[in-house]
Length: 114
Length: 114
Image (cartoon, rainbow over all chains, first blue to last red; front, side, top):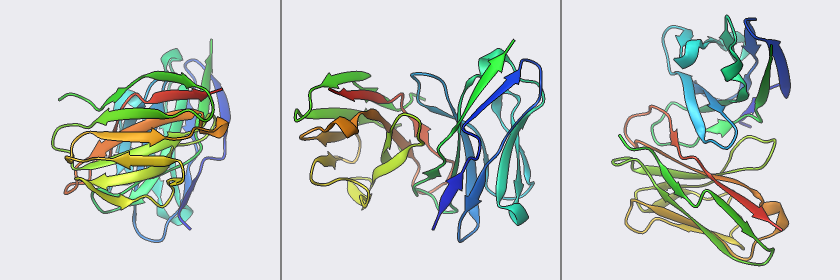
């Protein structure tokens, strides 16, 4: 079955510290992978996506993610967290076909302490 | 380009009442999705349209939920009658059908059923 697992429900990091959010997926074919961020009361905003090629992808707001096929993972990282990064983060997976539905993980809530 | 428009932003109804949500996708996006996001969970696909045809409605509770996209542009999602467990954020997203670049989400409608 196709699924996305985000093992950490809630993470707290200090402002300026580095961040890594974990994502593992189960998918039968070559997946397309996404990270979205959701601030309170807002819709989901795309941070970055992986389709093919370089397994380290850069996104907006200083985020990056690394696709590791052998580990079925697509972890999100940021070297230095800002207070404005506090939000909920969702990993999603979909097939390499346009116009198809994504499967989302349950999300990780990030809190940033000063 | 204009984003995905949704209305209303918030809705409070009593159980057994009916409610409707509206979505206008990005111009040119043939594929439209309705997702349900229950508090603390990731978005779950309810229904996917391509133009005015249904691609996937396997997770739509058809005894109470219905959706249409009559002219292949904007869409309406209806719940009748509502149950307490329908309290959630209803997200609309759209994407191109021929070129996979991920979704664009609307801000969502937060439904509270009391």
